[in-house]
Length: 294
Ligand SMILES: NC(=O)c1ccc[n+]([C@@H]2O[C@H](COP(=O)([O-])OP(=O)(O)OC[C@H]3O[C@@H](n4cnc5c(N)ncnc54)[C@H](O)[C@@H]3O)[C@@H](O)[C@H]2O)c1
Image 1 (cartoon, rainbow, N blue to C red):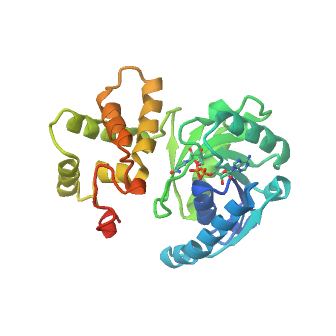
Image 2 (image 1 turned 135 degrees about the vertical axis):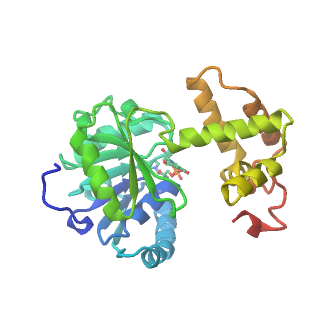
C-alpha cells in the first residue's frame, strides 16, 4: 500500500460509523480537507444533531487551519452505501464490546476489500473486536480526542494489523490536519490517557490524604506548568462519574492501584456532585461564573 501514488483526501471517501459525540467530531475533522465523509447512524435524530454541529464547526475549522478546504459530509441512514468506495472506516459506536464485534464483522464483509477498519474505542483495544473478522490485517485502533482543537490521534495495532496499514495511516492522517502517534505495543488507555490517568489518580490521592485541596492542586498546575485549570477542573468538565468509570476500568486490569482516588470520587458522586453537568463537583461556581471553566 505504501508504494501507491501520492494520496489526496479528495481521491476517495471515508466513513464514520456512529454519529454521537466522537463520531460527529471525527467526521468534522475528516471533512476539513476537501474530501467526502459519510456519517452513518441508525438514529435519524442523531444525524440531525451531527449535521447541525458540523454546519457550525466546519466553517470555523476551515478558517482556523491553513490549507483546509470544506469537504462534503453525507449523512447516511444505510450502512452499505455509506461505506462503498471508502479507503477508511472509523467505528465510533457506544462502548459495548458485543456491538463493536458485530460492527467489525459487518464492515469486514461489506466494506471495500482494501479499506482500513478502525476503532475509536477508548477502553477496548481492537484486538478484542476481531473474533468474526476474516481479514484482521486491516483492523486497527485510531483514538481521537475531544474537543476538535485536539488534533492528536493514537494509532495502535490489533496485534495482527499489517505494517502497511499503520504506515498508511501515519502518512495519510496528517493530510486531514491530524497528528498521528504510533502506539508501539498494545496499551489500555493508549499513550496519553494512560499518563493522564496517573496524574488524575495521584491528584485525587493527594486530596484524599489531606495533603492539599482541589483548588490548590489546580493552582499549582497553573503556576508550574502554565496550564489553564488543572486536573480537578478538568474532571468536573468530563464528569466525576465518567472519571470513576475510567479509573475502575484501570483498577480491574491493574491490581494494586490505590483505592483512595475511587473513594473520593464516590463520595462526591453520592452527594450528587457530578461536576459541571450537575452544577457542582469539586467546584461549586458553575451557575455563578460559567466563563471560569472555559
Ligand atoms: N466521548 C469521548 O470523549 C470519547 C473520546 C475518545 C473515544 N471515545 C470512544 O468513541 C466511541 C463512541 O463514544 P461517544 O462518546 O461518541 O458515544 P455516543 O453515545 O455519543 O455516540 C454513539 C453513537 O453511535 C450510534 N449507534 C448506536 N448503535 C449503532 C450501530 N449499530 N451502528 C451505528 N451507530 C450506532 C448512536 O446512535 C450514537 O449516535 C466509544 O467507543 C468511546 O470509547 C469517546
